[in-house]
Length: 325
Image 1: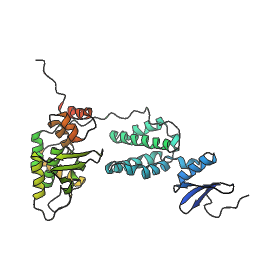
Image 2 (image 1 turned 180 degrees about the vertical axis):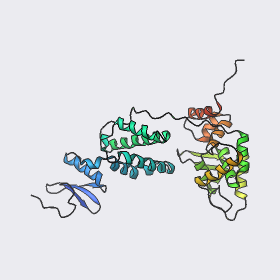
Image 3 (image 1 turned 60 degrees about the vertical axis):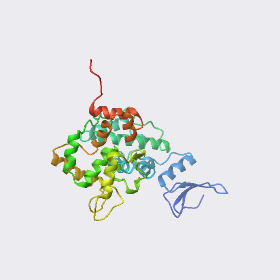
């Protein structure tokens, strides 16, 4: 009989901890120490696989797998996506946290969607998509070989935005906006970039007659020629007197960079004063629609294919067709 454990008494036979790491240790001599990592749940799974036994059910719960997903997968995503995923994952944990991963069935997903959809159909769809991805990662990591319960469960139909901003509407809001919001609006219109990408433009991104942008959402990079109206806007921003200068191109009179939340608050105030209801993100669609050239719009906005741009434009201004005669 082997010696009785004096430490780590909750571990099964053959699983030991040295320092911060877990090891599978053979009973034969010379003893072989196989490293299983620092994560207890993962180590228990690997130990069960090596020992040829069923893993402890407690290490295959959704909560345990979600923790690993948060630690290993989320950091690879864009900052905004990480923020959204954390909120979505908390909601999923509240319902599925203690369930074994393979115990989650399609009728559970349907029930979650129906209840969540009573107040937020779009968010319910996003949470279902995250649940599906977590489950797929659980399969890859060896926690389960059960089929993905999200397959075949239909989400809610979402109506895409179809708001086209006219020149008069854009002008009306711009006239009511403060100088910082005007800068952001002009840059958004002329470059076709998303609000977050406009706000993160640094002064050092303006060089060699080009404005360099790396999009947060897709990672797409754009080198936009600083010519025409864009050149005038950039020069206006760079030469405007301020108390101090920030490293960011879009900044208030005190030289402070603008956050998305601050932009939204200021923009909402301007559009309310103008009596116009479009959102700042609709400016990007206006850019795509106003170029008159789908190829140009696709390249400027960073869409992967022309069909995406065509759909983006058609939803707002309609499909261009010829009359009968």
